[in-house]
Structures are given as C-alpha cells and as structure tokens.
Image (cartoon, one colour):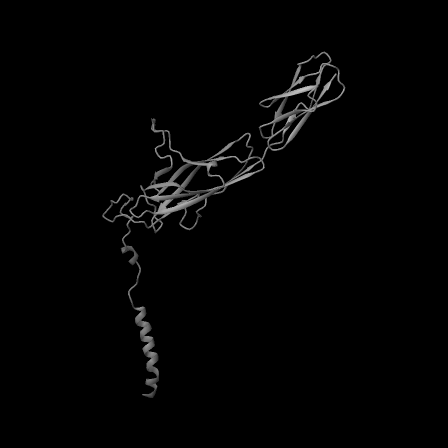
Length: 294
C-alpha cells in the first residue's frame, strides 16, 4: 500500500498526458472560415451577400506578382546625366505594375484601383510635373483628352494585376548642378473601407555639358580680301547661351547666329599679327581659333 501511494502521482500525470493526446484534430477546420473574396466579391459591394473587406494588400514594382513581403514599396531609382542645352526637360515615361490580393494572398479580380500623387519633395516644385497617361484610342474610338489628368483608375485583370501609366517631367538643372526629386504615389481600392498602399520613387539628374569646341581652329583672310570679307566657324558642345569675342576688333569683328560664329575683316591692310576669336558658354568653358592675314 505504501508503494501504491508513492506511485499514485505518477499514474495521475501519465493519465493526464494520455487524455490530452486523445482530443480531436484541428485538421480542416480552417476550411470552414468564410472568405469574403471566395464568392467573387470585387469591391462593388455585391457577391453572395458577403460585402466588401479592406483586408488585403496592394503590391507594387516589378515583383508585384510575388507574395506579400517579397518586394519593397520603392520603385527603382531613376538616374541620368544630361546636357541642359540639349535636353532642357527630361521626360520619364514609366509603367507601374501592381497586384491586389486578399489577406490570404489570393488575387482580387475586377477591382478598380486608383492611384494619384500623394507628395513631391524637391527644392523647386515647379520643376516637376507628374501626369497620368491613358490610350488616345480604344478599338479605333478616340478617347482623348484624358479625363483623369491628376489620377488614374485601373481595374484589376483575371490575375488581380494592373499597370498604371505615368510620365514625370523634370526640368534639367544648370550645368554642374543636380536635381533630386522624390515622388510618393498613393493607391486605393473602391472598397467601403479601402485597401491603401503607398509607393515612392527617387529621380536624380546630374547636369554636365559636353566639351566646347570651335572649328576650324584657324582661318586665313587672303591678301585680296577687302573690308567686310567674312569667314565662319562652327560652335559645338558646351551649354548655351554663348558669348563670342575678338582679341582685336580693329582687325576682325565677330558675330553669333545660333552655333555659327562669323568673323568679318575690319582692316584691309596686311597686318602681321594673329587675331584670336573665342567663345564662352554658360558653364564657363571656352574655345578659341586663330585668324591670320596673308
């Protein structure tokens, strides 16, 4: 009897563990949970009486078809070096893909999603313009002008995906300067309690002028040339506007038309010295050529 009393707590513990393991399995119980999107609810408020739900995720970027958490909320950075004399404004045309899923990762089909600009950060907001593009024709029917100039609504396809079409115009900075712009876009569904998402992009422009040149590098006025005889040189590279100069205007004068520098003989005598004509661009670069008299 004494030994039975000692063994009784152990027997009781083993009995409790055995009872715990005898309970029913949870396998398959998740299947009984109602999925508000399984009945085809598309955000319009209809579909089996389940209503709409804000549960879900809008994913952006080129990995928008991946599972939630496998992509970031930043689009790839746009970086470009420009010559403002050649490209005064840079237009960035970009499709922005997205995917809409429910909280289980199941695509939501036929749901309107609207995207618009939430904020722009830059030193000069007037240098940045964001617009949304739509087709000018659909099935041969002209649909322009765009009725949604400040936003765009796309209905998700059979995979729960869509693509916004955006253009960002950025004024090129002065030579040897740079411009950095960040734009944050906001997307919302048309649910009663909308699914909301943000995505941002950084744009960076470096401004560099190509080397300034003046060709040909030397010219000659012949002995038979009289006053008002002319020779022309061509300016290339650099960043306008340009300023031209003559080292001796008593001998040779200069004028500018576009990228053509015209030299005019002002002294018909056979002067022995060399005259230098030069061009200065807005970036401070210079180029020169020599003028001789035979």
